[in-house]
Amino acid sequence: MGTTGLVLTVLAYLAPLAGAAGFVTLVIAYGNGLGAPLMFPAAGLVLLIFAVGYTAMVRWVPRPGAFYAYISAGLGKRLGLASGAVTSAYYVLGGIGGYFFGAVATQNLMKNELGIDLPWWIYLLAFMAIVTFCSYRGVDFNVRVVGTVVCVEILIVAAFNVVTLFRGGPTGHPTEPLTWDAFTSGPIAVAALYAINLFIGFESTAIYREEVRDPARTIPRATYILVVAVSLFHGVTAWCLITALGTDKAVAATSADTAAAFTTALSHSLSQGVGQLISALLVTSVLASQITIANASTRYLYSFGVDRVLPRSIAAIHARHGSPHRAALLNAAISVGAVLLILLATTDPQAIYTILSAVDVFALEGLMLLVSLAVFVYFRRNADTGESVWKVVVAPLVSAACFGWLLYFTASRPDLLLGAGPPPALAPILFCLVGVLFVAGLGYASWQAVRRPENYRRIGRDSGF
Image (cartoon, rainbow, N blue to C red):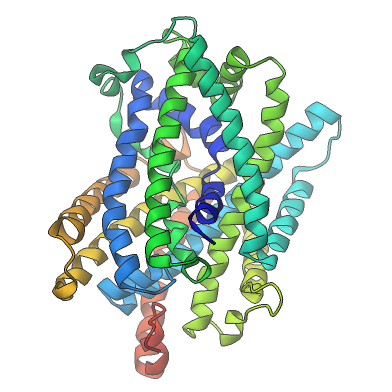
């Protein structure tokens, strides 16, 4: 892949349409209200600061394991494997959450538009089968599939933005959402928490190191393009949503029904029939996102196979497709097993999606904190790289402070992601799972160091072994 292919692949993970319909409206409803358009560039700035150190590691640690590899290089192989276990779970759980969300969205579409009323779990199985097939076929095949879907998503939202920019809304072309007073009008921490969700997955650019041309250039370029494009795209979309709904009604409308508010805004600027199209595109958006998540999860399992953390056979490459096909099948098997276990705790697909999304946000914040610290420590130990103080000291420490604060805020206010009322029984189990996997990774790495030192030296996709 070149830069374009990598950007499209990862952009599918970010699901532009689903993100606009879901999290942009959440920032308006429960975050800083009319100040939402400025929150996305602000969140993008934090992630750009993170990307400064992250992309420096891409150049100096030529390993395709991403978080797993960089934390191993900076903070040691024990913390690296522990973080790798959490990262793998982060992708698997994110994928499972998407299966449940996609199943419910498809069930509603088929019932409302075609009168076909089938159980949601049938659509979940169909999603899993399609995603596994695409993951098995390899990233070249996936780029063609998800690239088409992503382009259509972007065109729809861009058309809404352009028309709204020209036509305005009930209150014309408001400038209030672009003021400091509006930005600080609501709980900024809550707004930041929801806004960060729209960037989840941007870090997966580094996972494809073995499948892109000139990775030392392509991966940093794609990472920066993604962060800038997503922050500006959703910032403009937020302003257009507020404009189309009216500054006097936007917060109330999004609070009443976030998804319906998005459809209402599109109907105002485009046409009444756009709702049906959006419902169908939402399903394909989730499907494209699931394919990309499965690819990311598969490559972590593949890395574990290469490093002998898992059996070596997991690292096999398909002779014709060039894909890590056994890792793809293992990922599918883990997902099926996890879905069955989750259904023992609750059968409410909406609740499952909410819980898994919350766990994913919590895990990502912890991982990005560790990566930021790993960048700082790695370059302190390797001071002869010639990298600037800004790249290897200031940026990673600022990034660590930001994600440390977000991690603390998320841990102290889980209700913001789980919703009001007592948390479902599944929630504490899955949050504890993150900690259990981290400790298990530490223990397994320590066992490898004593019993299998050669395998231990491989941890983190160490290119010397």
